[in-house]
Length: 106
Image (cartoon, rainbow, N blue to C red; front, side):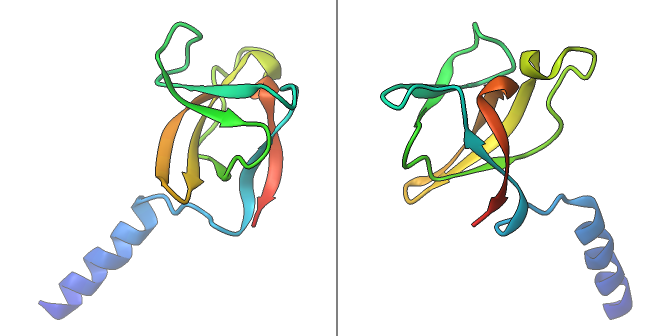
């Protein structure tokens, strides 16, 4: 029984994605004016509701949660799924790829 439980937990660890808190996988904001914000949307659409507004400075940690889609479109036209970690919690949503670049996580 114990072996089965350990095997299941080990398998679960390979199925559930791990989100990095250090190393690669984070993002930083580009192409947004210093006094403006980046809108995080509920889905990959400019018409989707805004779930968060991310200031260009003091943005918290932005983590890339998956591939920016659709892959058939040029990079700047894709939408990226992200999580924003702040002292107040975590917000998940989508941002346009043209407004973010890869970075190491703090």
